[in-house]
Image (cartoon, rainbow, N blue to C red):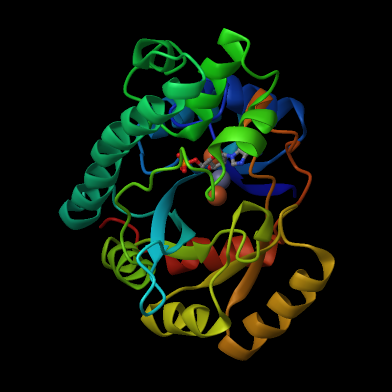
Length: 283
Ligand code: AMP
Ligand code: FE
Ligand code: FE
Ligand code: ZN
């Protein structure tokens, strides 16, 4: 059984509709996939319908943008938390996701204002890159810059303009990761920390923060992910064992938006069972 628990659609910063994504997953020989768009569950219904037609099992999920602030550091460190199978009508979690999505709009507009000083760009050009109702993010600004001819790829846009240490960078509201784990568990979901050592994206949190997340109800660590290097993976496996967490593997597929390929990392069927058992099913 081939299980890939981290996929993005155009409901956030992937490039395929949820239907197209499920078709690709089926063609790639995947049996179980999770849709984990950034800060939104808006793709669940469409993905679920496509999954049912194709005989693929869908694990509905979300990737929650969080931020941990080291003492005395107002910038903070980004943490991505995967939630699987939570109740998407849960008021507290829904409100938090809504707050993040809303703040992302103002944040993206401020980034465009800063960028436009040096690289002419209008907010409307970013909107043209966005599906209706999708969570806006830096990848859409990247796509608008590609369309303008400022850069040739998302990757180049991130390297030159959009990275976290760039003068054009603006942070958006994001919950504390411990609070987010509690919200996921409160909504009946299973929480897994995404790419815990993705150093390429910026700073990563110390192990003590992961221990704090475990104490708050975190279930697993996404160890097999291309952004965790081999040494980080070995360290994460040891940490997971210490903290009694399971480990997952996933592609973090974004369609044409990233080089990541569907199924390039997989999760063990026994771990999938733990996720299905750990989620509180609606009665
Ligand atoms: P944001 O959440 O708006 O801060 O944007 C972060 C998103 O940008 C992540 O979810 C990644 O999918 C995407 N991203 C980060 N670096 C790159 C890159 N080099 N190329 C393409 N996408 C990237
Ligand atoms: Fe993304
Ligand atoms: Fe992520
Ligand atoms: Zn992701």
